Image (cartoon, rainbow over all chains, first blue to last red; front, side, top):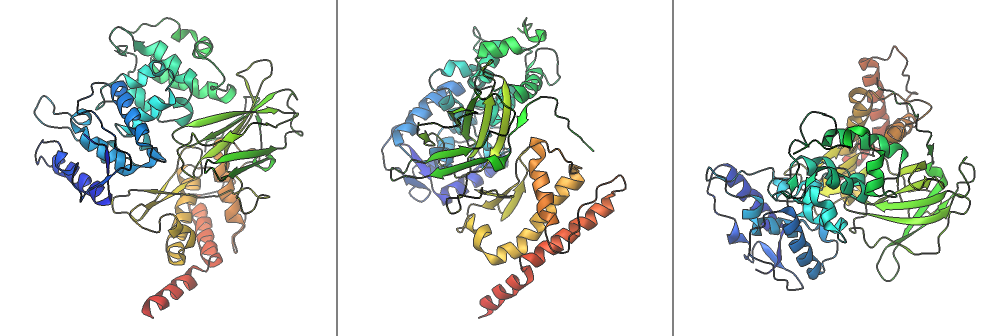
Length: 240
Length: 260
């Protein structure tokens, strides 16, 4: 498949298709508009992208980041038509058909990027690509926010990617990966992100970061140095 | 009412002591130069200074000498940022004996306007575009930052609508002012104090701006302040602001032009 972008009409069409899905119109991926001259624009550089279903945010981000880089687009992160088109192209990845035979359509900003500060990081393709690029030299360091299924980012992504100062800090993300990423299962450790503030859990980690940010420069510190600053509740992981 | 106390021992670096100019040389790759006045702060002269430029997607950091000599010979490129014009800067002073300990900080710094390098391009209201799904404009309040006025990105004029279109300004801006002050005083229950927390700086700036408007008295926030007295003060501000920007006249001019 050749990488393209939606024009304004294509973005509008994609919005209406998402709404139709919500009303239960059908479950076929919106492939019909991907090649349409009416709804898309061809990029100056021809870039082939794989026709596949990605199973993790890491796989997706690695492949798409590389493809978008080859396209040499200026300010690509701000290209709403591009990321919307990618959502439609990988719709089975970002919005798979569930066990009940239906797609669970999330808010539009999950598929069509929003510039709102509340939602800009929540796009299901641009979001992981943004994190992957921040950790380009060692993406494994960001496993805790790239290991999830693309369609279900979950609480680690929500809590860590929502604040610019956290997600851009190698120490913050690296330490979270050491604390909470289960290497053998390639998933977050069980019980590490409950809604409550149990000792040593994700929400406690966020609380402690809020305090440390007042007196430490979290860009000047290594993951291990950050771990050393955490209280004893984080010392012995009790998660599965 | 929420009050904050600064027990961190961290020094606040004031924006008046920071000048950051963004330049776009012929290469097209933006870069910045900074002029920092740090001599009056009680900070170790050998403490390293860092400047961080950031947008939503990335951050670039430059070591900028020391407190005694805040200077770099290196080119401070902004090429890694996404190209948005809404990037900002942080200035950090780090403990020379503990490389991660923060001794001083300035956040949410805007670059100096290229047209007036003596004055920082401080804006009380940031402008951005977004798909608002039918709404022409919308206000958002990012935590600790100046409010953002979003204009729907299907409007061709984009953010220049707010900068240049007198009809838009006359109709929308008074409501924007009312909403922002309502947020500050009624929803957040912020009250001005002599020591301004970093996260509340934008609120203090808005109150200070409002108090300069014609017919607006100084905001009294003693224990007798009621919702009614605050609402009345906001009303005075909106009226003063509307007169100040000649809102009615702008609407009349626009309507005459349409009729003609």
